Image (tube, rainbow, N blue to C red; front, side, top):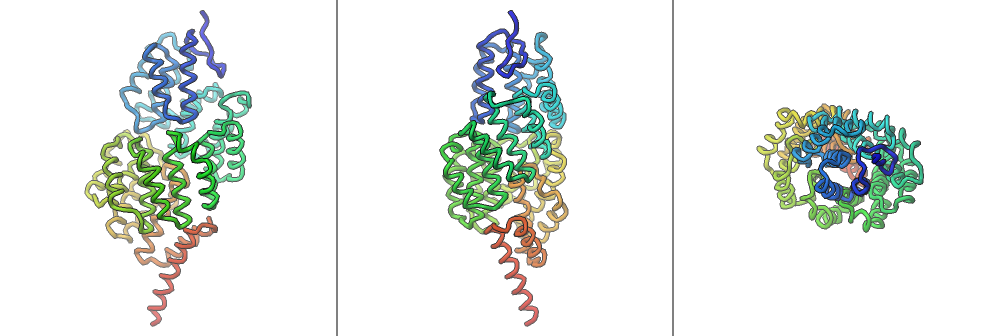
Length: 450
């Protein structure tokens, strides 16, 4: 019997239709980000462990989980692919790419998945993994261009076309092309109305153009969709809280945290990153609470940070420092140099920024604001390459300006506030920061004249 193609027309090494059907179901879960892909493909592999394309999908899905991946399960999938002498060339290459990531070579894995995509632009699994690794490595140009390069090989008849548009929209947004990002994201939703990824892109556009009222209205209107999506519910709730934060609604942001983020803190490192990032922002404003930090810190201590990414380590240190566990924060920060797997899985700029940023966070939490300013200023030029999105990296800028304000470095604070206001003139948060900077500076000058 001849081997069967998948629904994208690509050759597989299986001749069993039910296995291809299971693969398609699991792949659809990955595109939806509904959190079910591993359980779906797991049931398929229980029936047929020698289904190599299924092993490729499980490996890719585990890589998409990042630091939350169970290494033994990924290693088993890679070994199964290697052991199949009848595997197709494409399946073997998937195994090689997954092995690179398993060995800690994220850049190498990204390159191999990208090469797969170049040779087979309709390889949906390679597309998903390459796109995710582009984001983790801070390659914003590839985040946009890789999807643009394959779109010509897809059309509206393909079920995944709307998802590809959502991915392309995110790349456009992260490269500052907000108008086109908004257009393409809305086009994605026209094809797939429940595409949480496209909803997320539009939230990013409203964040970057500082229109919090539109952002709040958008996320409230779409909340039934994203709140039911396992992959996006915490992160989009974080965006909602950011809009409330920018609008001066700290109490509402805390309510969003309590209602929509805190109940999901056991869902992995990404949820803890969002929780830590939001509570830190609120603490900069003087809001938040010690008991919330204790809960997040306890969760970080249960989660896997060894072999993760520097971006995640920074947020774990943030939680420890905010909880006044400074010794534990310093010990965790020291892992940046000792953890070779973590270093291999982090982007170059992400690594360069992490050490001074963690030093600044620890110094800030101990009231040593001048030291915090000095640490961040040394790497300020790369602050937008923290390992997350531009919106996530804004935490670096916010920490710097608050440290300058609290450290009475008024000239620096006024300069930073003016820069932020020029970038986002409609931001209520920026106007508030600017007013504080100028009020403090004026009061100091008046006292000096007196």
